Image (cartoon, rainbow, N blue to C red):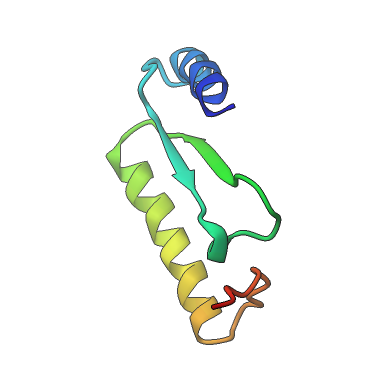
Length: 79
């Protein structure tokens, strides 16, 4: 599924951004996902500043969850 998604994304990136390699793949492990199975985001990015902006948004979301300002509803890891 990841191979199909990235090949489709390369086509979209070429059409919309002009560069078939202008995308980022984010994979969420068990402790960061809401459902069982894979959790992948594929984001089209035009340049490194847009990628930096994406990471700033993710940092803000994670800080908000860490300080209980945003609900953290990912499943708990059992040991």
